[in-house]
Image 1 (cartoon, rainbow, N blue to C red):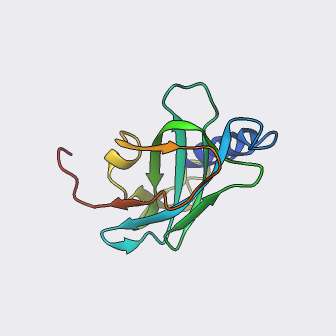
Image 2 (spheres, one colour; image 1 turned 120 degrees about the vertical axis):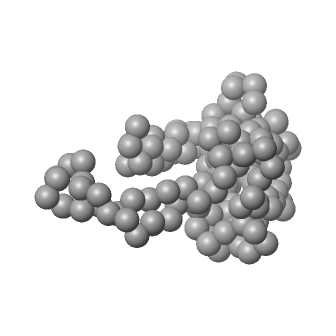
Length: 144
């Protein structure tokens, strides 16, 4: 699945996970900080995926190390797997898959797989506000 489709699918999941009031649907407000090698993660995404798969996945963007999921959209109450991603341009260009006459810059996820695709991160979301659900990520992860 290409990056554009992945982003579109993520957006749809986030929108539909917010149907109804977060207080009535088993969702709660969550906010926190994300650091990468001790510094605020400038830009990225964070997703909360229920471990029991009985609720919606929700997520949001990370800006300057902070994120908030709240209002009509919330994170599923219970134990969640957390995925964090942040993409950066490599400076390398390849022919565009849409138009081979145009060049597209290669983008890679700078966050280790242990924090996204193979995430070992979890969070327990309680009813009400969940403040300071923070994640301190390192570029060098053991067993990777």
